[in-house]
Image (cartoon, rainbow, N blue to C red; front, side):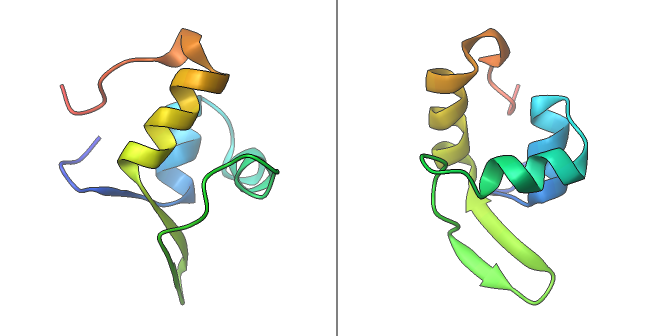
Amino acid sequence: MGKGRLYGTSEIADRLGVTRQRAHVITRQKGFPEPYEELVMGSVWQIKDVEAWIAEHRPELNEDPES
């Protein structure tokens, strides 16, 4: 992943190994972090929030995406 501090739906999909459509569904589920910002192009989330969610809900994917 890039060195930015935000994930969009495509980055979340890549991180989870799912399609963008599935990532969109996941990001709308109860318990997923609230978006950091709603932009015209879509929602964005802080990486730290998404990674905390992954650590709790998908521990098999737990890794440092910045490395």
